Amino acid sequence: MGKKAFKQRMPQDQAANSEAKGLAAAVKKTPTKQKATKEKAADVGAPTEAVGRPPKRKQEAVTDDAPKQPKAAGLRKRPKLEKRGIINRAPNQKLNVYVCGDVSAGEIGLGPDVKKVKRPRLNPNLLPDSIGVVQVATGGMHALALTHDNKILSWGVNDLGALGRNTDWEGRLVDIADADADAKSDDSDGGMNPLESTPTAIPEDSFPQNTIFTQVAAGGSASFAVTDGGRVYGWGTFRNNEGKSAFMFDKRGELVEEQRTPVLLPNLKNITQIACGADHALALDKSGRIHSWGNGQQSQLGRRVFERTKTATVVPSGVSIPKRAIAVGCGSYHSFAIDSDGSLWAWGLNSYGEAGIPISQDEEPRQIVHPPQRVESITGKKVKSVQGGAHHSVAVTTDGDCLVWGRTDGGQCGIDVRSLADENVVKDSRGNIRILSIPTAVPGIKATMAAAGSDHTIAITTDGKAYSWGFNATFQLGQGVDDDIEIATLIDNTALRNAKANWAGAGGQYSIITAPAEG
Image (cartoon, rainbow, N blue to C red; front, side, top):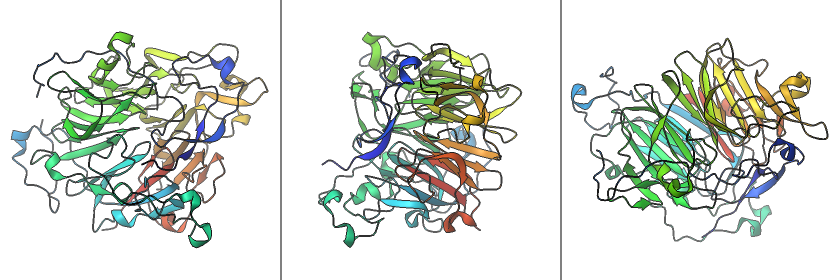
């Protein structure tokens, strides 16, 4: 049964599709706030796949110790570390989880009766004493959480299996458009599937006994979990530009279009980090090698697409950069890696300069970056984290600079671009600034991390404050209004005022902020 669609920016120029026509055409049109379908959080057509090689038919799947972690309550008994090949440490700091947004299927995790929260609210379904969340991941229209006792919770849209569990519900969905507005508060419309809108653990029997998780990651319709031994479980799907789904090849070499329960991804070993785009993923292993898989028409996988082998890209393959990588990051259709020197490497879609490869006013933009290229405009600084949205990106350096670049016409970059030199921006035919071509620091912010949604951004500062900016039609900025916000603005409400935020996640129409729980 369908659900209500949500408001999302959709550029009329369709800059991200496979037939991008160049900046000259792109900058002539102004984006409008529109509603998008529930099935995708991205604001443009999803890209198709890149080249790879599926396993042969009937071929069986290929099936350093870290310091010992404190034993958490309810944690499954662990075998001796030296016998388990531990390479990742599970987080153990319990978190308060704050949510905001106006959602269609419970992406804020407040249950079936609350779909709109204008300012960050503590989620009572994820309290530290009763649940003990230690890490959160935001996808386009779903979210995941890892708990202190090794459970994986999921909530949000499950149309394509992104929640990793059964959410079939026989209840009647209320048509919100026909509901009596006077009989309900502005944040309580009801009618959502309680099995989607309420954070619920994926059944323990979905995983082998004694499996210990250290990270969860979420994309558009795919989800992943990394174990302490560096193995990866995944579920959901990737989608191409025509809406076709593909997730992996099974042991018989048959294509699995949608994986609705967790499954081990046999080609990934010794993985330390995963990052997700709209329909692709990157994994970093302990040797500093990068692996990519999913859809890759915009070369976000770091390799070219061949029509005859498109679905083969669901098999992880290596991405080459000159030096050892220490972190990876994704935009919707572009990708990043940080090397051991703190330099930033990028590949994929660059129609608005989102990959960080400069675009000048008088030149046709380099729509696709391939192979991976160093972002030379970030000089003299070491990058420690990076994320991208649909057409903008944000990075944080070791000295706390919050660097932004890419599309600007919805406030995605959070600075007054009109004050910048002409050589740093690109204007449309009417003189309106559309692109910030050079990574630029957001004034007045010293950041520890930053998150990019499709068209909005949230930064967490060194003193634990959260700032937000960008597209805001669904209250994803947590500022209490639905107007776009062009300049980085402090999120200041009762719930967050005395909290010391340490992380933020930006979904398609919602946001999540966490802060360590006391005690």
